[in-house]
Image 1 (tube, rainbow, N blue to C red):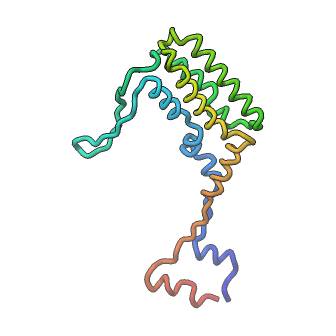
Image 2: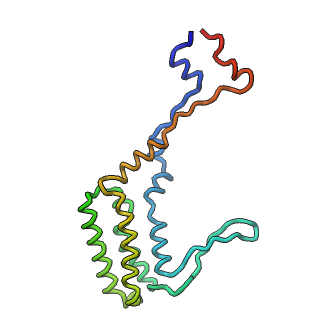
Image 3: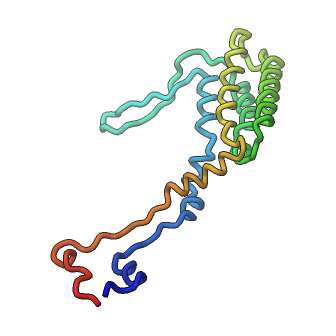
Amino acid sequence: MFGNNNQEREDNNTSFVSNQQYVNNTPFMLMRLDTAPLLNDIKNFLSSKEIQVYQDENGDWNEKLIQVGLPIANDEGIMRICNIVKMRINKDVVQGNLKEEHYWDFIARARKEITDALINKCYDWEVHDSNLDMIINEICALIEGYLTRPINNKEREGYGTQVQAKENTIIHQPRGGIAGLTEGMGRS
């Protein structure tokens, strides 16, 4: 009388969207793993620049980088500091699996290495002594926050959670009008 389940699914045009498309979705993974925005924030911080958003004469929104003060490091210093940070904040590290005690060891070691590098090179990099603590603290705060992601494998588990949230069952509605109202009637 009502037909079998396979026929009903076919009649309702039910389709399932696979999780795999999100796992293999390059933009999705790049968004999760891309560290370039963080590194650009550090470059802007060290060079005393900020992004200004403005609307041009055509009404289009644009961004431009403007100088808002004196740089707190020279070009070489900015590059070297960013390279030091890249060794700790990158797609490979964040996909690791850190136990909490290893996380704190990693953070302590990173703070020491960044501090040593800045103190040893501050004059070559034109970093004023009064800026050392600020640079170390800001960069280490960023690293600490970023590296909470791999504690107890939470980053990779997060992929599964994100993917699961994206899984959908799409049920196509019957056609509109009389055909939609009568669809399925009179079938045996």
